[in-house]
Length: 291
Length: 309
Image 1 (cartoon, rainbow over the protein chains, first blue to last red):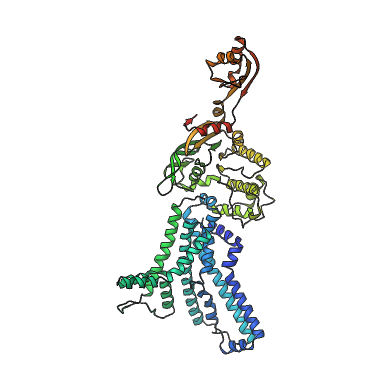
Image 2: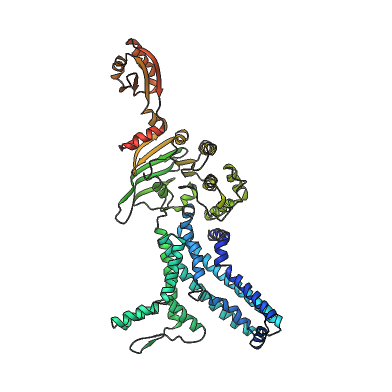
């Protein structure tokens, strides 16, 4: 059942060329564009050639670079739009009424999460490959090095770093998809769910300010600790931990600093992922499909 | 309950709104035997589409149960694999071709159908030549045809069709009518048909139910319902004597002073004529008038007394 549901979703996503083109394939396209731009710069700019020769790129860093896009709230905007099309599109096109009698509701929603995650991961892996090869081509054209040399240790370290980046991006995407899918059920509109998703995604990163204000107003420093459970804060913490560094944590008015462990951040993020997916599935299961 | 009963609706209620203000369906009870075309009629806002959506598990009843082939729709979702539907106009993924839409629907139904099955249903609705074009460019009629193809894709035992003739030209309407009858008469399917085209319903349906304000107000075979409202028009002189001659047995009234309208069946015509002749009344014309389903529908939806044949 799952493979057929996914194939159906695949047909819908790939068939919607405008949405996938503008919000998914744009990323690998961007890698090609960067390569072409760099090749153009190689031909026309001696300072660019000198710059690359003096400070050569490392393929291990170039390959990881694209993952910074989904891990950044602003970079996530297009992915939110894509998720909105996927979830709210069925409401806006009035197609739930055709497909809901054909399958159980929970798998219908779950397969959408899977499709979002897979397409995003696929797009960024492709972007990563194209960018790595493209900048390799640029280095080759200039004659500069493009290290490090491929050895067992380099590949092991790279695979670890790359896997971690992918995992963080996957988590980020699922959390954003959770916001958007819930919004889709309430607004039943692509625009409505996309705007709501963007507002929540940006809003949660700025939640620290109102919490700090409330904490100061009521003279209760515990209020600010709510921020420890916000996804973006924990994603940032996790990112820092994975890079082998220690996050700064939250400084309380009393001077005490709370630094959450990697395990704590992983646990909070897992709760958000499971919670949002479960909540969406529950709402959809209970929802009346009307016009 | 078994396969002989395609649809069973028991004490069905549905209300909408936070304070349950809108009572869309109110204590509806209905049984549709398998192997017939069943018309489901009602004015706008009567609760037809809400009922159909509950039949398809799209919305949950506030109270009561819906069974398809003896299985509870909410508890046994698998029974819906025996149902094909077209609800409130055909809708598709406009950016996909007609054929691709059918493939998506088949996959969602957990079926890997051979290409020949898609060809077959597309041919049935005369859409095989246009199936590789994007739905975005389809006319309403073409979408409706594709909707019927989608409903029949999985060869369902029960077809639930809500306004299937919407957007179709007279030729298309005739085709759909023939197709519906064929599905029932030759393939043993059951069709639950909701339509405002009462002329079509009258021609194609075996039984009909009429609902108004969420409640069942009439149910029975088309013939029985219309016979109840049959009339015989008599042009005769003297009209007063003619009225007196039939009045004891049949209700009658005169119209324009020249026509006597008698509430009687076709079978009563010889008896009435015989009685008029015996009373020395000159008869110029006797014409049995059968009410159309449209007239009947309009007359009963004004009143609301429940009446099941």
